[in-house]
Length: 215
Ligand SMILES: [Zn+2]
Image (cartoon, rainbow, N blue to C red; front, side, top):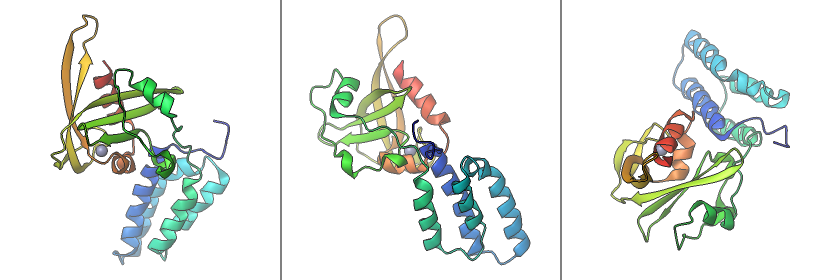
């Protein structure tokens, strides 16, 4: 919150990247100028309010409107745009432990390899115990979910990113509201949570998933 340059949330970054990627595809496959102009107007309308949050960021939107843009230039632009993303806060090992008080041995996670500007949530697998751990920073507080994660991956719909990909069944025990009994709940989610994050372009499904398992 201290750095005013960081005007984008990770899922907003992925939204504008996905949207403008459609432009690049069209630049390389569509010859009709009218079609390109119409698509540019449409996508610009969808994403310009994000770019307008910062004057320097806004310059990059104009660069994306150039039909001669190469894929390399597109990637380079998005490396710069990424510096405008407010990264997810990095949880310390202690903070992760606090999220999972009942878990005795958590897998070690090498945080230095992770780009937190790409993450709406942090998810990691414990292959030894067939578990998946999910962490979010909600109102400056880390909260975690974990569940059994059946490693039999298949192609399907992910309940978090709402895309089709390689998914597996996540099964967690949750406390029913009020009466203290426990129920098991499950959903298919992406096996690779870093890939899942790259596909999140709105928080609706993540919020729904989280609420369902937090009860
Ligand atoms: Zn997903």
